Length: 614
Image 1 (tube, one colour):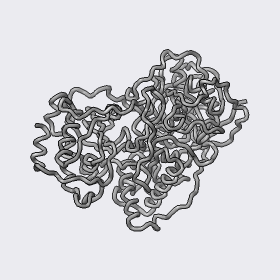
Image 2 (cartoon, one colour):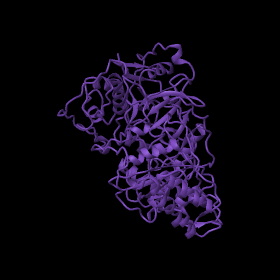
Image 3 (cartoon, one colour):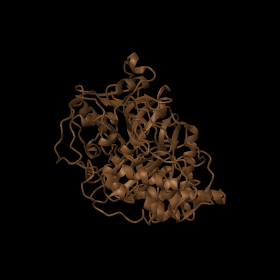
Image 4 (cartoon, helix red, strand yellow):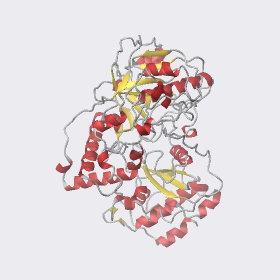
């Protein structure tokens, strides 16, 4: 008899003592208000798009610098959740900058409806694991394999059971045939009568359903994410025959490692807590004790300072570490956050034609929408489509992101050792790579090579040469040291830019600047006064050099603050040439909120501007 794994709405969260917003002193309240303004700038549009804005904030969430008492109380509670999660997991990173920040726990439960109940695990037996499979250390990472589909977003429907199993089946079919299909989660949600659609489902039954064949996403698009409704089963599309073997369910850490040596698998976890809700990067070592309430995909294991499992979620690529989370491995029992309580997967019917990984930038991350999203361009077009603006933006909604470290501290969390050259699944924990319209403080997926910065050089041309050269000339005029180019992170920035997202923050998390951009190539880029000057010129006049702060809200000087932080040693940028405009995004590694910036010396601003293209 198969184990019954049903996902319904019973999420729980630890209830620790709370300090009310009204009990804070004036400075503390001002800090909460400032951070809420930044959240509204960066995450309110995304939260609203996916139905994560509470009803009480529908009218006020777009008012960046005006907050209701209810919003302040909710956001302050999230800040305290972040502190609690950080204290319990010092080797991971958490932030209030995510799409769930204004939801109460009850609303979070109701919106996602993805908890776990009604289980019978007695028939799930551990697999016979080889000595090599269970040994400490080692690594396997399917997230960079060509058979790994993009991170999805289940939206307002409790369909984690469908997204996790469809993703697992897509990979298994691809490993067997070499064909990566985008299968229809909506068909599973609406048509699998053994489960309950947006009110929960059984992963093992779902895989049994999928083994009979599924339609493609293009023929049966996902709509429940916006409606929150299961929908009526449609039979007009043509099913694709899938190469999937028998459904298997097992449990235990050794068993999961054994499975992952061959393929990814669906696993259940306890995710209705502040740890998962506010996760940004690093290895989670502790979750609040609770029953499993969410289904996800285990895609790898590896070692940093701790052994870990790499998990792929269905809350969109803006959540966590680009849609992934790392859970400590080797703790025994059900595992960290119950990750090895139940492991479900279809047997492979054949060996994979090739398991060679592909660069993460080759496949853009997308979220399920009611209509198929357009494919990003593989490279910039040959002609510019829009002239740059004379300044980054007049609207505070285009300001850079806040570094998502815990509210109570400005210190970075501890980072693991330098990533090995192998394509292990280990996370990189540099704390300054945090979200922008995306929730995540890590630099990149675990398989991205360690940063390979190159020193500033006059031999650089193109947009990279322009951005490095002009940034360093501006910094030098203020007595600040040069920055170098983070090549690995820039590849991820360019992948985001290549998806043609328009004038929106996003991509790899971090202290990010955004501006319109004039398309160019080669030496011609060095003759254009580019985005670095746009970010600097308008906001420099508003900078208070005596107080090391902005004369106005942080959004007024955020671009200047990011670019001119003395602690910034590396930058990473991406730029687009798309039908919806030409834009440039730059992330600044180790920026700070109120940097001590020296005044310009030895030249005027006009002379500085002239020197940029000299």
